[in-house]
Amino acid sequence: MLLSLIRRFRGSERGSISAEFAISMTVIIALLTGGMEFGRYVLVRQKLDRAATTASDLVARAETVSTGQLGNIFSSTKEVMTPYDFTANGLVIVSMVTQTNGDDTIVWQRAGGGTLVKNSVVGVEGNVATLPAGFTLRDGESVVVAEVHYRYNPMILGSFLGITDVYHIAYFRPRFGATVPLDP
Image 1: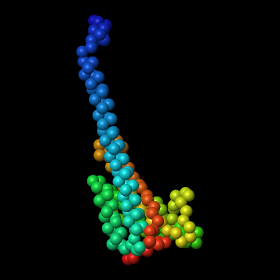
Image 2: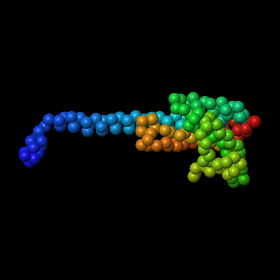
Image 3: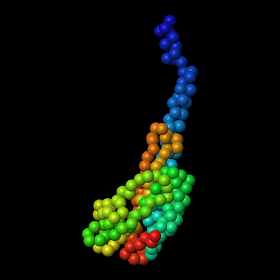
Image 4: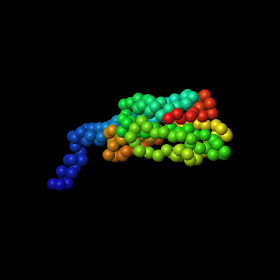
């Protein structure tokens, strides 16, 4: 009895289409959600690149920069990052690094644009800067460094992928002089 039931079940093709459809739909849904999340992550990375480049370039174009102007630059970063919530999940750190007596020193540093709490990878104001290997400044030369931190929370696969901190940095040399002084 049981043996004949197994033979009959093995030979039957009813329901095989439903099983194939269920398996293939699972794969298709996984590919679609993964593709959407990957595309969203790539867009965030591109926007971070643009935000860091914009902030560094705007400071490098100025003859002097004030705290108020830096506030405006930080606000522009929020616009670059739209539609992502940069206020709650981001931070911009702008530093002026100058070569003096053989040391790359952080002359001034300001942070803003969001409420995320992160430290600068370059260093702390008044200390020696950590610049990439091969990036050298001659005595008296300066560079404007803009770092952008963003806490990325996946929209669809958040519980599976988890929150990721994304970081980008940009360097520009001052346009109108050896350095860009900070006016209070």
